[in-house]
Amino acid sequence: MSTGKLDGRTAVVTGAGQGIGRGIAERFAREGAAVAVVDVNEPNIAEVVDGIRSEGGTALAVTCDVSKRDQVDAAAAQITEQLGPISVLVSNAGVTRPAMLWKMTEEQWDTVLDVHLKGSFYWLQAVVGPMREARAGNIIFTTSGAGLIGSVGQINYSVAKAGLLGMTRSASRELAAYNIIVNAVAPAAATPMTETIRTDERFKDKYLEGIPLNRWAESDEIAGTYVFLASEDASYVTGQVISVDGGRTMVR
Image 1 (cartoon, one colour):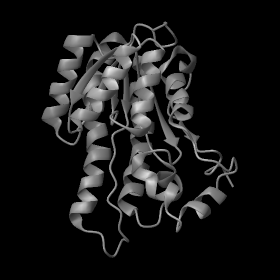
Image 2 (cartoon, rainbow, N blue to C red; image 1 turned 135 degrees about the vertical axis):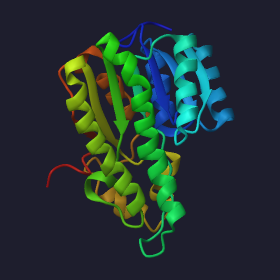
Image 3 (cartoon, rainbow, N blue to C red; image 1 turned 90 degrees about the vertical axis):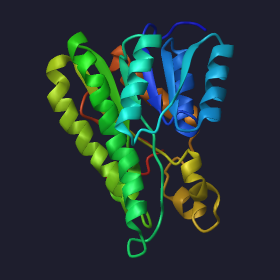
Image 4 (cartoon, rainbow, N blue to C red; image 1 turned 180 degrees about the vertical axis):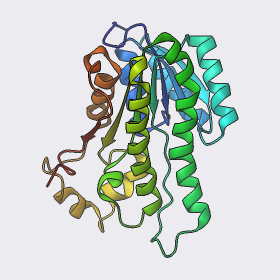
């Protein structure tokens, strides 16, 4: 596999067993990064890692429930030992538990916020110490249009994704002095989690009408923005959220 924009870097991608996370992990490997493929689904990450290695890339499968601090800390230690110091973190793991707000249970609320917010915060804390010592690092959170404009039937998901915007901006301010770049990407509906939006007759046409480019995204189209934010090309870009959604959430 040829070297690229991320040559020599060790990258962690959570939620990398499928969808956008898988696309990011595969694209990072093609750009020269050693990639830790992190997910709770062990068979999925094994498949992703096998695919990367078959193309000459370097990848490590790491099973981890990001909502559990002990698992995050253990995963970070394993990655550092086997791949080297972590220089890029993509906090992408997510879940949905949809329900109208008057029907939503506490369990549905807690599950979504624990994965998105606790998981991202745990990983942030796990990598930031070594990055501060190295005075270098790139951190990318995956948010969503739901965090920017809201979403019917997913108040838990929208709140979690909006919270990641605050995490991005606060972390970017705290870490700028250490030359650590922190940004967020708000991708389009291009994952198994959003399959209902893309295929259900009740939703897909209305949703597609709101996308100026009038088509669905492919995972690799979204992954390119993560490569940019993880590379030297983004050395003067921090505290930002980039929407990669075909224009759906542009300023109106």
